[in-house]
Each structure stands twice: as structure tokens, then as C-alpha cells.
Image 1: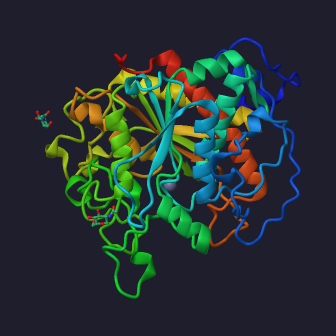
Image 2: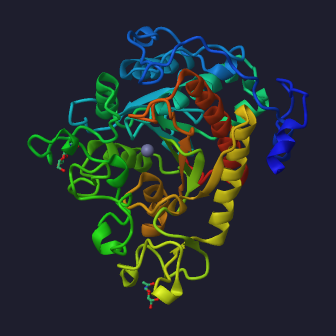
Image 3: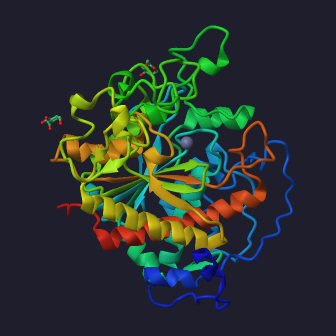
Length: 449
Ligand SMILES: *[C@@H]1O[C@H](CO)[C@@H](O)[C@H](O)[C@H]1NC(C)=O
Ligand SMILES: *[C@@H]1O[C@H](CO)[C@@H](O)[C@H](O)[C@H]1NC(C)=O
Ligand SMILES: [Zn+2]
């Protein structure tokens, strides 16, 4: 019933007002229903064919800085994602980078950073990663258009509107000042393949472990390739479900031959290594309508610091939920209570902002409650500081935007036109709130440049 309070006010917040407090989120109204003309084929919204940003000479604008209901068109193709970032770099003077290693198909993993001090890596505190799972269409679009909005609003002294949620120019400046690093296309080979073939492709395209005559055996699940409880057979209870990870190359969750065997996961680690003051990380996935936070290995617990992913005493008992002492399962992943509270605060605010944008209710809970995973990037981000206290503590999140498209039976990850727009509004609103919450809670260590 609490959600109904969202609908109680008809007064639209005005652009240009002071920064909103979290409580004021509840005064937002849901977005009016949008009517979009484009037809849904049997693969959902189509993928753009040309290059709408003309190699970087046309600057992208997100939905939040345009009239509400603006048709954002087709999904961004891989070329457009790159051109869009190049255009943001040129228009707003932000910094572009490419990770050292190329992918199996020879593509760079590129990104940009905005809002910090140019040339000063330690002035960046928030990292958004997108499209690690190829078929989760719109993931890259969400972050590209959000950054386009944020930079536009900052330069032109305006606020932003996402459906029923508005942000003032003060919010915009505060959000951007967190220092944002983003890699919008973490799996360029997989996305290119998925866009060409409409095969609901999840993994990358590394064919090293592929089995002759089995096309599904190409590729590694990049979000099982990080160095967090990677050796799942040793580190987890044998009864934990198949989403954990797999050693079968034909499985959707094939973990690869070793942790960080893949150029794409190494690129994400490299971004973390080269930005020593990161405090927040969000990996953008679909779908489930939930914002997940650490841990993804087992239920969180705050009383036993020694009961954690580094303690091999608990190998073979990790990952069973719910914990059942009678069955001999007493494992919970340690999280300092303050960290847990901080994670929940940022997640709850982001989730409410997403709800306020379109009226759709998002959940927020620790990742293991969805299903336990080994080798995921959000756990890796947060684990780094526990393994090496000299590294900054990075709060790890995984956003599962949207609720799936039941019209596309073969691949519910492919959004309809309507859903694509909803996702853009919801995620942007959630990203804004996430940045504002992070800036309130604390951004991580101050760097010196
Ligand atoms: C492909 O997989 C092999 C085996 O795991 C690995 O050594 C190699 O680095 C991968 N290639 C790329 C480009 O990531
Ligand atoms: C690992 O857990 C065991 C059992 O609780 C405990 O005795 C031991 O001290 C822990 N090891 C570390 C390094 O915390
Ligand atoms: Zn995913």
C-alpha cells in the first residue's frame, strides 16, 4: 500500500528548484503513458542501422533533457555506442580511454570519464559498466543517454526530467562532481554478434574452448570470470544451483579457463586499478526489476568477521540459502554493518527514484537472494578491499533493469519500444539518485593530484 502514496500528488515538481531530499521522492508522480508509433517485430525494438552520431560529430541527447515523450528511436548499434561516446568527449571535453587488451574479435574496450579533474585519476569515484551480457539490450543505451543528459544539463544550466522524477541543476552538478567513469560496451564482440543474429547471445565470442559442431559452446560468461570465489567447485556447497557458474563451454554461465582469462573482465579490473579512489560500482544488466548489492555468494551476516570468502574453512558449505543449521549449513558472508547500511541506503533511494520515474516498482536486496554466483564483477569490486586493504573500498551493485518482454518468447531480454523508453527513464533516474546518495554517504578516498 505504501507505493500508492506515489500517486497521491498531482503537482509536478518544477525544474530548477533546490536539490530534493530523499523523502521528497514520494511526492513524485508517475509518468503519463507514452504512445510510441514503432511496431514491435518478433525480436522487439529494432537495432539502428547507420550511425546517428556520424562518427562522433553529432552529439547524443538523452530523454531527460528533451521534451517528455520524445521518441528515442531504435536501439544503439555497436558503432553508434562508440560514436556517441566520441561525440560526448568532443562536445564536453571529457576524457576517453581504451583498455590495454583487445577482445577475441579484435575490438577495444573503451570508456570515458567525466566530472572529475582532467588528468587526475583519483578524482573519479563512481564506475558504471554496461553490456557485459550481450543480449541485455538497452544496457549500453541507458548509460550513454544518461551521461549525455548529465553533461548537457551541466553545460546548459538546466535540470533533468525523467517521467515523474525531476532533478534540479544543483542535483546535476552534485551528481557529476562525484567523478564518473563509464564503460558502456564491456562485451563488444557479444553485442555485435547478438545484434547481427538475434540469437539471444549472452557470453563473449572467445572460441578457444568451443566444441566442434556446437555453436553454443563459443564464449565465456564474463560475469563469472572475475576473481571472486572463482573456483566454485572448491568454494561452494555442491548443491548450489546452476546459476553459480559452469565449466561446460556450452553453458550460459561458462566461467572460462581461469579467472580474468578474458580481455573484457581484465578491462574492468584495469579501470578499477587505474582509478585508485573509486568508491562505487554499478554493473548494468536486465532483467528482473531489482537493484542488487553485495554479497552474491551467500546471505550477509554482520557478527562473524572471520566467516568470509577468504576463509577456506567454509569451502563446501558456502552458497546454500536459506541457512539451515539443522542441515549443517551455517555460512553467511561477512559484511561490516556500516557498509551494509550504506549499501541499503543508496539502493533504496535509487529504487524509489526508478519507481518515481515510471510508476513501476523496483526491488532492492543482496545479490545472493536472487541466486548465488561465483566470479561476478560486483562482488569482485567490493572484495578487492578485503583482500588488499590498501585498495579503496568499492561498493558493488548490479542493476537488473526492466521486467522482460513476454512478446519475444525466444528472448525476453529484447525490449519493446515502450519498454526501451521506460528503461531509459527509470535507469537514468536511478543513476542520478545513486550518485546523489553516494555523494552524501561518502565517495571514497580523496586522491592527490
Ligand atoms: C580466450 O580464451 C583463452 C583461454 O581461456 C584466453 O587465454 C584468451 O586470453 C582469451 N582471449 C581473449 C582475447 O580474451
Ligand atoms: C576461519 O574460520 C575458522 C572457523 O570459524 C576460524 O577458527 C579461523 O580463525 C578463521 N580463519 C581466519 C583467518 O579468520
Ligand atoms: Zn546479465
